[in-house]
Image (cartoon, rainbow, N blue to C red; front, side, top):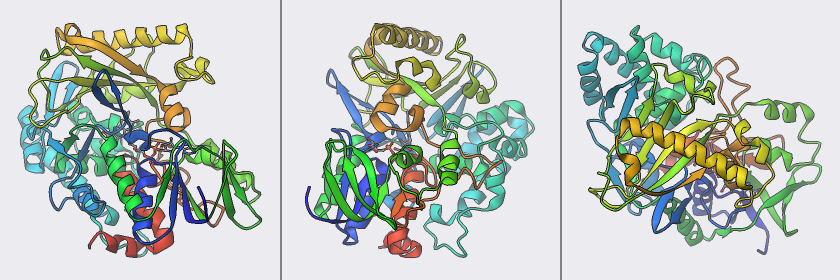
Length: 497
Ligand SMILES: Cc1cc2nc3c(=O)[nH]c(=O)nc-3n(C[C@H](O)[C@H](O)[C@H](O)COP(=O)(O)OP(=O)(O)OC[C@H]3O[C@@H](n4cnc5c(N)ncnc54)[C@H](O)[C@@H]3O)c2cc1C
């Protein structure tokens, strides 16, 4: 690693890579430094016994030509390189609530028709819900690649209303309310806190069209990395930033854990804000800012069982299965460990187009970091026998619960692997293994929004804590970060080319 860079990006998650792509394409001399051997953060996949498992990117939406992610991906060179499998149009998600299954269909007319069959007395409510969700998405300029006027990114009403209040205002039917909120593991929604816009933008995103990535989400990271190198950028792995070095006015360098020093004119951190500021020892980061950032709560973490099936035993499911043992989808964040898991998300992995049998699947349930805190500070593979036992017991409980929905499935499993909140904390340094970073709270809308700007004028943040999480939220967050170098409407213009 030599020379002085225009911009050093710390972390090669989706946010770091998209910023790296935009800025290197625009001629900046960019270096990305990644602590892991593999790039991608949550885009990483891992292979065991010849089978691929994704860790944090299972399905995406709005990928039909002209739709919003398609437009971003076209610019990012991903539409040609990433193979996709369309999920079932008549039910890309199935919400299993208290023993009854509800199909969430692609396309708004289809969505209305499908749910109205289950809730014939609530057809008008469903239409009203759909209209309001579309209105929210239409009113968000960055989600439509519209130029920003007067610095308005979102209508204040949608920031200050909770999802549950919003849904309750569209229908009084409690079952329908829960079905409409049934995709909330996609954003780890918290009742009376998570703002409406998060639900509306994500729901709109997937109803437009929904797809699995064939062969692993790591291809997204690899494709972006290849393009960045093609544009002259550099990517260094096994390069963990230990400190940001500042003079009295600005950041000047990063120091890696191996002692190496890298200098740049500007810096972007793709690392969780609470972790980022812990690496800065400068009076420019005032105590009040540090306290505010450190006081922000994070979304819950998860426990995942990565399943390898015996060959040709399990028909491939071309949909995602959201399971709620009881009628209240909001109960997951405050789960009772004795009764866990009363909710989970089950997804088959897609290996090839129109496949007949599933090779692998993932079974994900919320888990608090507190459950694994006793093993904090231990390293991967050396956490001890009690940790292994803990994982085995949790996995067996999840598989027993899965069996209730898919009788006989346990007999089809050849082997399985697991991850805990410690795994995510270790691999991505997301605080407490949090799935989606800081919780946005409609009661404290400005306090829980993290700006891409820090108190250091040439150090910016990107990733899921800016704007929002997920493939679209992080991509738009990267646009917001890159706007600091290029101008917001100039970056938006890039996507029109
Ligand atoms: C279980 C799970 C399932 C998900 N499923 C989906 C899905 O189906 N669809 C969807 O759209 N979204 C999904 N998401 C959300 C999505 O994965 C994330 O919002 C997004 O990938 C986060 O990207 P990021 O750039 O913010 O950060 P990250 O992916 O967390 O990347 C941060 C990077 O910084 C690196 N780093 C950290 N510290 C340092 C350091 N000191 N020095 C150098 N590098 C460092 C890390 O190693 C990592 O590579 C899921 C998330 C989870 C957890």
